[in-house]
Length: 357
Ligand SMILES: *Cc1c(COP(=O)(O)O)cnc(C)c1O
Image (cartoon, rainbow, N blue to C red; front, side):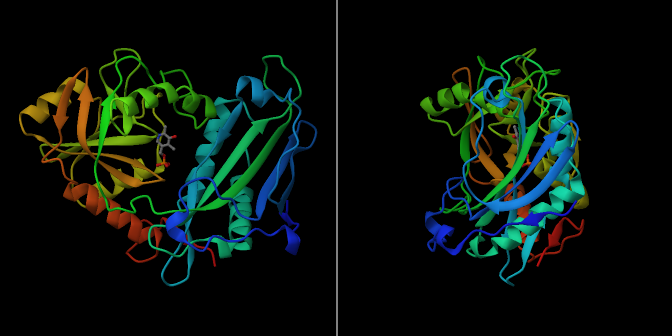
């Protein structure tokens, strides 16, 4: 299958933002989008790039009622050398297929999705911001489109990719945040959908996120749903704890989203000879380590921020300051190393980046 391109007319073009400091996240989209349809008789068909615009959907579309949908989030980066690069993008489409599997959505051809992404990004390449830390966010999505309000897998689907420029995550510097462990709400339970990037997980997290904000914290620290003791994720990021020289993160037990940045962090740490452990870690053990002075660093990992250092953890009225409350050296090293790889400025020992122009 070839990806067909229908470019927009001159009068359909939108102005490209000129002030990268005003980009923010997730509100600006380029002139084009990718789309492709699924029907049982034809499979995935008609992959095409078209002018960006509204979708026409029946209000009975299944996705609107029961949330049968999956998505991904990745970025294209413009280096100082002018090159445009994608970071581990095949991994995103492979993960999208694992999410599809969980939501009984027919799988996509990874090579086709990679080709569609490359073509779309290059067609709208003028939109990729060049300022440090800025990038082009890429949002592939698949939704169930049968006009049927019964609970069943849809027969038809729409896959689309929209892209848009996003600003630097740390415009004021690489500063640590406070996080708040919820003892009331959980994000996911083994056997549920926590491993899949699907909208329902995020709808279910909003209430806890609001509660964290009301307490003055930036993100929710999610504990496991069964015992409410073991740390799982932070906000929409994976989480790492450096205790006594060793870096611990939760194992992928079924309720955790297998982050690509998480994997990159684990591989870099191994490469640097820093010991890592994927094991269950309880909130009590973390507070214990903190009180003994053994908790050196805490940080989240995800595509949006790469690494988010944590300065304080709150749990049931107790507060713990991590290290001396400032950004730790390991979080900074990981952040700077991954950033340099993404912008084509550093060694890329694992071949994570592909230059596409
Ligand atoms: C997307 C996501 C992550 C991070 O995944 P990356 O591939 O590193 O961006 C972690 N947790 C949740 C819940 C997510 O949705």
